[in-house]
Length: 599
Image (cartoon, helix red, strand yellow):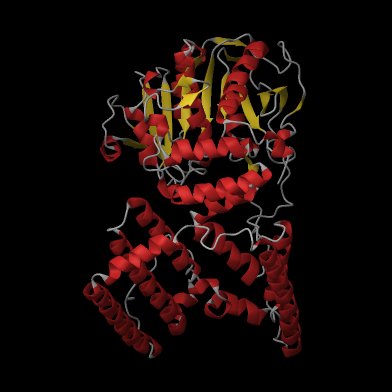
């Protein structure tokens, strides 16, 4: 629903809509209170474990009251300047702003934020207060342990973002105009959207980011033709139909993360990584991870290796007769792949993998970005307690965590659009995938968080054991291509670069692409959108900044660069292989049944 201006503003219609809005507000409050009454006994008072950190912060701040007073005085001087400017603005003068939003900040795009003196004052006073609060916390937090400092910075930013005047009816000019023009219908429809989201989240607010009825997996998403040729408790293995008469001899196995569903790499035909690879003459297989329930709660990280990549490689050998594969691994799937390669080397089976590409993959978690905010002993114990009740982590909890990393884009923009403006979200395949979350088995997820994020054991050579085998990433000699994305908020590119200093491969290529964790990867050549950086120097400096300074920027997608590199390891051309032509017979059509299980 897009709010249309009425020919005239009808007081009766406005009053009726306000009454309807009040009624829906009452329903929302009843739902909220019922949820709190049901859950209050299970919820800790400080579930994010930030109370102690803020207490320490204020202790440090009060130890130097002179600095606190100086910052407050600076803020009041800024406000005085703003008040003077506002008075002149009201008289029709145009002045340079005291403070302006970042060019990437979309919250204040409406013209009224600049043209109307009142809203311009609201915007600038908010920005001044936000800057004051964040700088004060950041400077004082410098005296705290790094984890506490990072946590304080993160949650201060969450608070600052939440308090933006753009998030409230009476201080958002676009929302006020929509309310007047529609006689309040935007609020009625917005509150109904909120009720629908509460119902969909079973009492928790699950904000709709896209039209959830516009997409259906297997109908207009994940539609590259193929067959499921193998399955076990954890995976379905899909083999795709060839589109060329001949294909490269070495099959390509794609290993996505199990935190989300695999079809991020097979959205629609014009942005499908899978389809593009098939069209380049590769025999492509992809792992579709199960969406686990309580029956799989005991599945371990070991199980994910044995029943994931290793089982898939055995199945591919049956399907094609090829013992060797190349691997494309994404995010957490890449972390698992690096472990698998080290395990294979320890077992004298390293030749099973001819080449590997890691997409936005961390193996050294020392600087894991803002996700590390959620990892400390108290929060892990709380998370493990919740997982023990059901045997898994709810997919919505993981989705909320990722959304908080970009709250203005992935939370507050939809609050404004859906609830305040009363509009229905726009159909967008990537956001549909983002909302199609998956669960995490308790045993595996606890192991992953503690051993990777909390203790960083993967790079403590031999300290981490999988299947009883010490894992040493330095032993990996497999030709390696590493792709990082410059604006990645999940796997920061400088952290992914560290792998160049770890792997033992003599053939190593590092490529940095523009944009973020998803858009930088799903960047088809036909769009000619995001550029990438490559270096022809085979010696990788320890400093990622130095690498970037020496790298060459190239236009467009990284896909052709990878395909050119991969041809050296893809083998000679052979007649195209159809799913079912080998020893494995099709079980069902792609995308299979595992990916269709929703939570």
